[in-house]
Length: 220
Image 1 (cartoon, one colour):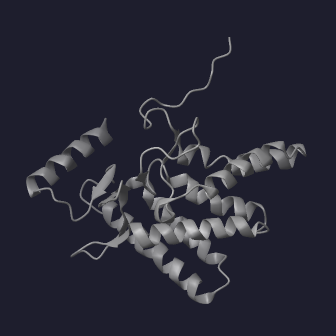
Image 2 (cartoon, rainbow, N blue to C red):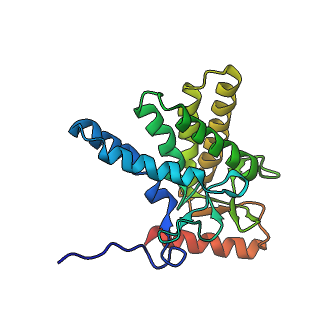
Image 3 (tube, rainbow, N blue to C red):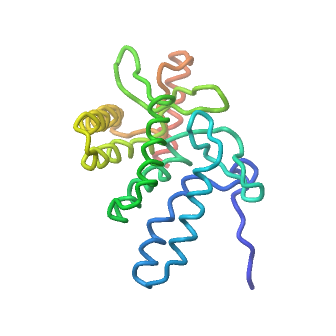
């Protein structure tokens, strides 16, 4: 019996998730390579080019896309869960294609510049760099655990930058995000909770309760 594919009901009313539909091009590119059939590659490329042409708030990619209207759903933007792999795979597909797709490199760079400009912050007084999230026009100063992948992504990017200043910049950014993630693990319990609230509005008691709840989830 054939069943129609559907999205998760919790995903902004059944919308498609950026990190899912935006991270299949590498595998399908490889599939086209080993089969000699470009159909798989071209399907993914068409999707990527469509998404790239959509109007984006401040150059940022929202986490949800409506598969029926082809428009963004709610304006939730994150380089953590729901968005993470999309950015990583732009870079990896470009490398898999042996850097021939200049438009893809430009798409990746523009996406990275946007998240740097709007989502990158430094905490006080700890002076740790982190990526916040955006909901609507509101910045939510929490860093998702999955956002730690950006440290490796920026390090990889730095290896392929032709401009020496850009190379140094992204290697430094990789180190800064890596330091934040290291410090998050470098605690008595030795665990990174699901997300970190940075400079939050919560009281000390509320922060402790959040931590205890997150640890209880991690240990289940």
